[in-house]
Length: 383
Image (cartoon, rainbow, N blue to C red; front, side):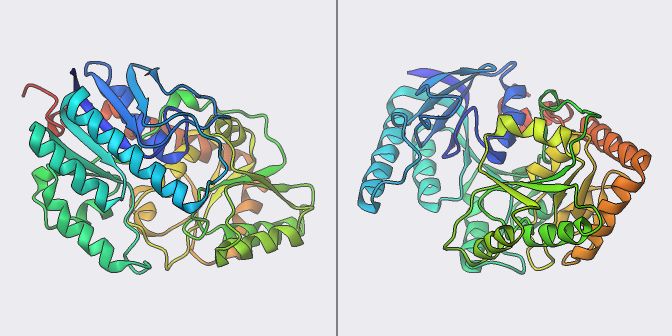
């Protein structure tokens, strides 16, 4: 049986993935400098990704997938269900028979997985923590009862890791000693600022385009482009035509194909260059979509030193000082257009705002600022 200090369990691909993977890497790399860390992924590496190894090591972090590399195409529903059960069984066997650790972090919203891991941790006398990066449930949720249930069941964990003050306060049923605010952290080495700007603005979104307010970003850009037809908008995301909001986004893209270029889902290691060479970056969640979170992608936007336009909403307005981004009111595409005008008409202000944003992230949002209290919270240190 191999002994580790910390085991992380998640469905997110590793070491190359999207925002969730980057979130975990931002602190696991720091922990791995003097702790033994293992990352167990419930899925399998995708055959055309940068990593196709089922197990290996990355920046001092051991990782292992619970199944063989798989193509991106979706199998039939019964087959997917059977494979998921097999992956869970494999994970549980590994934890019971192959590995042991002082503590385990779960990065998943799955209640069933949480209950199973809690049972294993009790049996093996391991501490179990949960990392929650957003809480979709305040003013907007299709499952508010599930969110409240998650809150009540948070008491069953050794502790909760939250990404924002809003998330921290949401778990007010827990004492302070069982909550740790680990804000959005960024590996600054991934982002190299550039003054060589292309005539494009850039948006990167995961599966939840509505959360990121993509329609407002597009509508604001199209207003701006009436006066500046030389600019294009590039969008990296995954579209789901069955989702009504996604369908509206696609319709607007199709109607303005000469102005908006849809890139599809691109690998996270390709994103830093896109950020660095853009004229501006946009993230405009609307006023009815509050998650008590601070998007990881926003932290990466700011680290790139490219001017950022974002909605003054939720924890974004609580965290960001006014001089590091171009803040707009939610649901106001015309303000997005005005911010873009300012960025191209006042290049010195735009450049200074971008550099202040990078300085802001470098000063407060790297693991070095949190490593010692975080290790103590996870019960990895001897204190």
